[in-house]
Length: 155
Image (cartoon, rainbow, N blue to C red; front, top):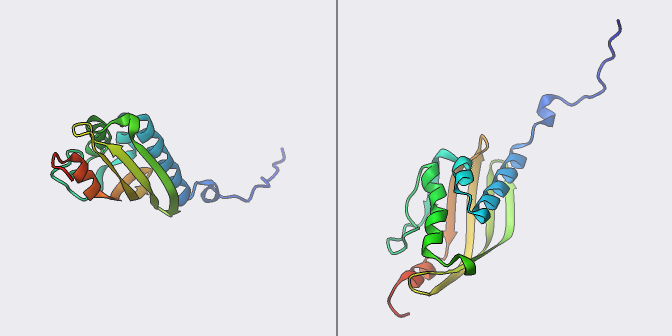
């Protein structure tokens, strides 16, 4: 019996995806789930405990503190309940990945269902992916425009 040695020199570590590749894949899955409104998938993508940052705004029902996977995923449903989904827009200008961190920048716009008023502005989203799940979700957006759109007061 003869044994021919393998010609492959790749170790298992060489074939495993890098943390940046994993981060990019999870964030792309997150974006696809958001676009599809798939809250079950969003819940699975968030870690059990999430470092959630979105400037709290008592006037805006969908902008509030969150920390669990289910709460984070529910933000999408709450947003859709209070805005007009047919006119909502978001575009991503940049998608940067460095290890476990990803930063997306772009522009978002929408209309509040109760008032018919629009909001718009730039955003930056920082996500951290650890063990294939999102552990940090920090969103920076034009919260003043959103608060004005929710308000019943004339501008």
